[in-house]
Length: 222
Image 1 (cartoon, rainbow, N blue to C red):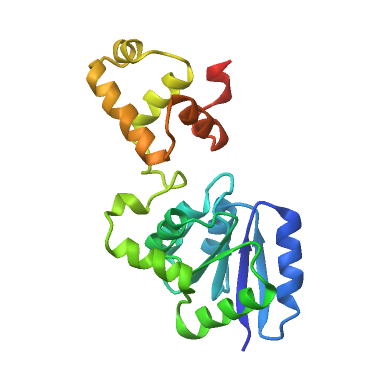
Image 2 (image 1 turned 120 degrees about the vertical axis):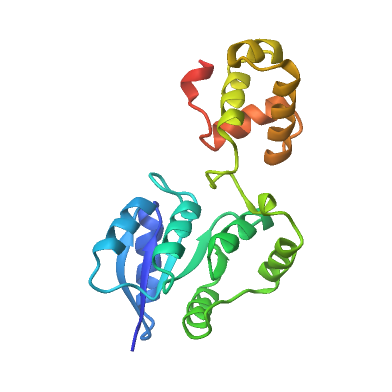
């Protein structure tokens, strides 16, 4: 019996290369490739044969890996998900594990480690190396909000997003308060929360973070 695998990644070259590498293993069969989370879920809802494992990138258009994992974990709990991404920090690991991933790998992992992880997840249900274990332990001792990243729709509230957009538009706290019909102090609280959540040190860093991660439209700062 082969391990049925689906690859979900918006980088076609990486996806095709990964498929070629994994298909060389006699125990693995690639049954589908998706370029984004939406395409992946559409496949699952109509598929005659579900995969055993999905190898999931985090950063994808339409629907990112965090939100796709949430949905799949709820609707198809029998499918195991392995995060395979360029993001190699504890917040991203905690976020994916928290929403239902069974393993976490970075894209520069050796081929043998990827194959080993797939088989461990298939036969044992999960696979955490020492670095992931540390992140999981810290997840147990942290608040749920600490396990979110900007790929999680709950990471930044709607009001915080509105404040962020106006900050990027170079509005002062007073101008933001007047625009949103809230107090200046409330604006400053939102600004403080944004700085803490994103881990940047000042407003310039916040603007760069917002643009790099597509949290706001570039047109608003032109």
